[in-house]
Length: 90
Image (cartoon, rainbow, N blue to C red; front, side, top):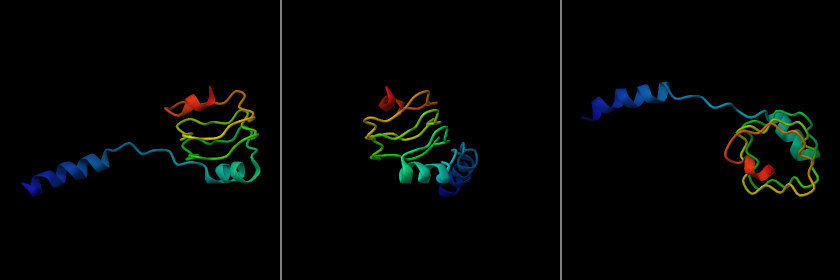
């Protein structure tokens, strides 16, 4: 029975939808300068990030993990954001 499950498991792994990796250069720029206008931060893991007074105007935050992020005083004008953690921007 174990051998019958292996092909099904292998097939499901091959058919899995790949996720888009974050743009590390843009994420590093944001974390070091707190300025990332029109950056591609989609898929970025920004959990617990202190981005107070950061400039994120026009940034793409789709599917970024913004859980417990500090955005006090941040400029978040016109962000592109889709995903469960986008409530942090409202």
